[in-house]
Length: 67
Image (cartoon, rainbow, N blue to C red):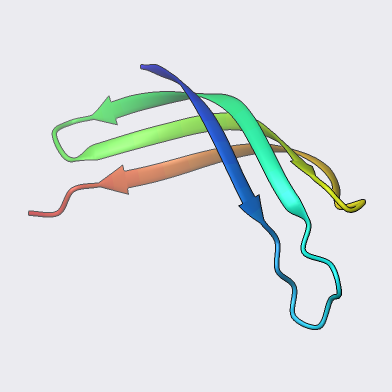
């Protein structure tokens, strides 16, 4: 199934004077495999303030339910 994602946060690096704020958005696809396993593929765009830059991320996640 297709899904939309959004996120907001803050980067805190030890010893750095700035803490850039971040916003992200993207799309993903979730594919169940059997009763206990799920693969998730998503792509997202992340923007960080305070000259933190931009990132384009693609991730593959594997999740499971252990009973």
